[in-house]
Length: 382
Image (cartoon, rainbow, N blue to C red; front, side, top):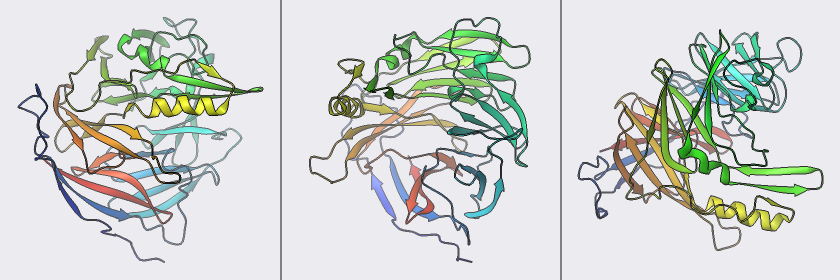
């Protein structure tokens, strides 16, 4: 058995207080004097191995922030990581095929209430428990949903509310030829009643995708949508813009939150010159053009402060062959009503955090430490 590895690989204290405030920026910017320290911790996997080949793409954090659940496709097992003890507790076996099969080419994992989780493939989704039992198969494309007709409801984009009452998704497919208006489809799971909420501030997201046609194969690079739930409301954004929407399903109300920013660019502004290429180099150049514009991340809730955090970054490709690229990183902070209360550039960061979440007031970000599961732990002071 390996000893528990808790490394202080780097202990840093950064101060952003010497930064000049942009003209017109708010005097109530809570990040004006931001400082933070960084520690790195590593999970003890014992005599087992935590496969990090897909990073934490098939992982999610429990609501109490005590456990990480990470599914491994290669061995069809669910790793349960104790985040208090920084140790691998167990691996739970699942079936790939059959009545309790998880399927192939898994897309994402979302934790739900009562120790259940939603596991999605590109075409199907299922609700499982920790004993490997499938409680429900879901396929929105095959369901009759009143109020939503002639819409493509892809299962890989679907979310289910923690209380299992609602399904919600962005209709459409990245393979659609024509750009369509962005909407949120909100569906009552019991009655199969649905409603569409137009999200026009996110329409520009559809313009930032580019296809590579290689014979019968099609490769798509597209921007992300972010769908989340907090205290009974649903929040929707995309990687293309700082604009956000909040939707209250009890009142069917939708609210746009748009911001005047002083540090980060508000949105991407230069879409691909054409939607499809047959030359790989030309396609890659367009992908690089999109990635070199601002990219926004998802909302991150901090229970200790009752604030939302959101990172944005601008990739700066390396001009030296084989040298790593780096990004300019920005941090935005919102109150619980999504009012912007702080923003800054974090000059000391080279990349936006990966798989970020707050635990005990500190931001955890996935890092690979010599093929062991680790986290950079950031303690913000402002």
